Each structure stands twice: as structure tokens, then as C-alpha cells.
Image (tube, rainbow, N blue to C red; front, side, top):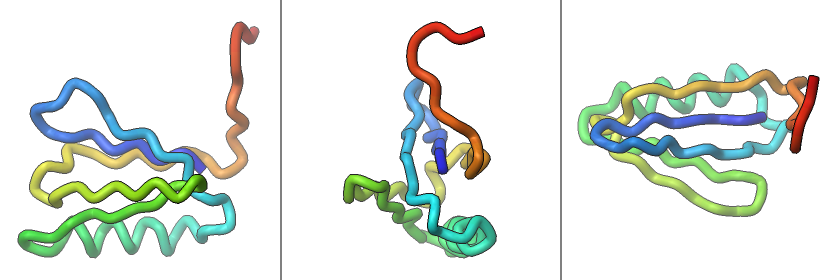
Length: 77
């Protein structure tokens, strides 16, 4: 599942490929609790073990892709 995190004052977004075995509702609840805490950190880990921590007050948006969405490479039609 693809998760994109927009960070304020940054032109780039963080793109994580999260393990598909993670329950989507659990993921949303984890994100909501991290962002709802004053001075909190959003902490996530991707499939390859890369860890990302973003201060909650710097998160502009979080986009969660479909677990069934296939990744495409190259030109598609």
C-alpha cells in the first residue's frame, strides 16, 4: 500500500511503500493518534525497513493509496 506524506514548507513529499498486511483502519488510527497529539511525531516504516518520523505540526496531508492498486513502470495506456 502506498502512503504519501506532504510536509509543510517542502516541495517534496515522502513516499512510503507500506506492507499490504497492515490493516487499513489500523493505519488510519495510528496516523490520527500521532497527528492529534500536541508535539507528537508521525512514525512510519516501509517494507524495506526505512523509518520516517515527521513532527505532527509539519504534516500538511497524508494520502493512503488503495491496497489493490498496482504499481506501473514505464508507459501505460
